[in-house]
Length: 320
Length: 309
Image (cartoon, rainbow over all chains, first blue to last red; front, side):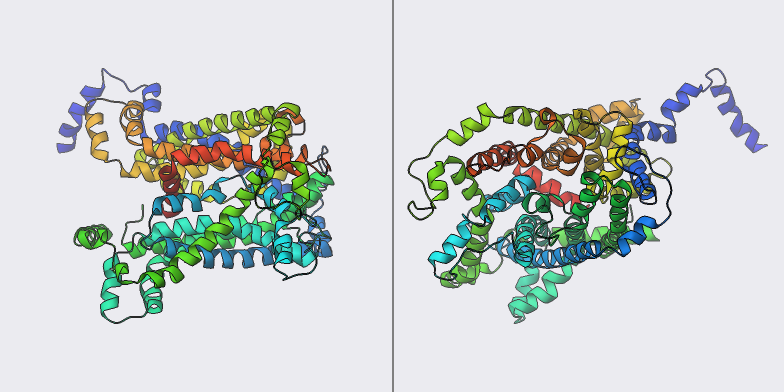
């Protein structure tokens, strides 16, 4: 009875004005959401999700450049499993990622702590520190290529003048020298990103915590270990995930400085897949190399995800 | 239950933030340190790091204006300075190569794809944060995951896709594929900005009969201008920096972007190429550095915001 009475006015009100399909499309929350998501969705499905799936499919085919392939099962992976060059690139990639990330983190954190001190011209210094990150990687890689020139390297020249070495260093010609050189270039480019984002995290730590700790007689190391580090952990997790992710999939630096040489000593998985897929034309094999990178990336993403969750939990934010 | 906890935590955070404003704005206790100590522990390491970070740029600029004979003769002339600067490398680059065309290509691709991505991500971010349609949360997560998919695992399948769509070796190959890198990032960034705009404003507008579209254009966007600038600058920089797609999808010289063209077309085995190469690298970085100089704060907030959100 009560229901009928409550419903009645609604019916009479909506009767003369029937909700048309067009109006529902215009006003309904879900439909509206759909329309707003459409442009981004089209881009991401056509040029991101579809290629991602296609890449995994290609890795199971014998596709060549300009010719669709047939399904060959895990043949590409079997081939790679027995290919010593592939294992060399995996080793290079892991070495490159781990060494560069650890050093980037150490120097980045140190630089962030320095920049967090009382400094004259702090804003300018901070702006200048970021410049290596702004300049396109390829262009700074060319500068490094010139700095590491076997004959006219200014580094070799300076060291020779200081009588530290007797002959020029062949930076990019010797396998291990080349590895350390590209790692150095990567660190050089990555440090500003780590430093500036960690600095943003440091600036949210209240100085009163440090003052209290100083009054309690703490050492600088204790203040870092028991105040700075715990408060910074969530942001460190996220920054390092990004850093590891982008180092792991690096292509530009290597391609410009060494093209994977000498004797594949600096080939990373990304440059190796480019060489196999685009330069030699074995799309299927290249796709298999790319797909082999996905498990590593998933690990990084999971770490990042839990890092984000933990941050929210620590700051008592709701999960939105 | 969780709501009350969150509210309590937020209040506590408010109290914590509000209580010691004096202490927060002071310089802490670093004024107690003596100058010699600060010299060793602060200024010395800082200047070493700054030197290493900036030296390649100095070297780039110096090489670009040094005459060729000084470039390769390190012992007769001081390698760290030149008294006879020349514009030869720069004029050669600008008038004897296709460098202006490459610069124009890069600019065109960067502006078009940034504009496309910004429109798409404003709509998407607004829908995820404020329309809260069914499944919006999961779409937000998906966008974040899309941000983590690197171009270097996508370029092989994308090259076949670009070929299928008939875009191969046209600027559209880049204009349409760059947004896949930019949209996830800028959507994520803008979501953070939109969340800070009080929804009471929107409720008022809804009561006054505004449509969602009007709310977005007249209320949300004007308030989110700083976020839009940050997203624009960061996207523009990413476009300018992109290499692997441009290397794979473009083969004719007249459509190449600066980073690819410098590496593929300018490197010609000439022993005197270093001057023009460095001039090319320098001029190619200048637009970004100038843009960055004007919007440092926006850039930093984009970078840290994307990490913190």
